[in-house]
Length: 311
Image: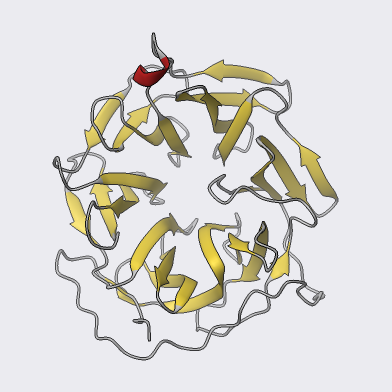
């Protein structure tokens, strides 16, 4: 049986293994419900960024391979990862004009020496983009850059031999980033990095692998995914600590993101035919299980392509 996760604001969280609550699996064809989410949800399909809205699906990018989109706080720009041969860069586009700015220049002189950048995340004030990169380390470390491509700096990395950092998510106050670890041995866990001091605080200490943290828009909650021998789940917990409640369960669940109003969570999950789709579920934080709604239709979604929900 899996643990019920406990999120702590201290370095030594406590978690007592107990039977996991029963969560509703993501069905192959969820039953339509009268209530429905709104806004614009970005995802990756077939090497391009696409947008879901209540009116349907729309392709956003058409050039090269693009993934891991992130709306700016004003929803006027999209940061994303452009993938080349042996490298990836951060780019920012304005959907209204189609203008694209390249923030990094990671192409190497030879293919084997390129640098990788992933997982852009805008700060709440829109002045900074967090991301992970191996620009100065073997494993991915945590970096910051301005939307103009200036003031690039590394703020945190694990010691050699400890693995890397993934999936940064800003707290509403703009001073902290939740991140996931991927150690060389043992399950990954969640941490918070203080952007001002680079101090790292551990949030979880579970036997399950914990990944893809996402702060709620009001900063009061954090969503994350777990994977163990019993399956994968999406959880919700208070950001200041406490026992998590399950939000969804399915095949290879990952990448929970909040709707701008905080009332819905979208996430990626596998389907029975080994494809991935995007689902949304209401965020009733009392642990009540709701039926997920399928948003991606017949489009096959990239499992690691990221999600971002805009107004």
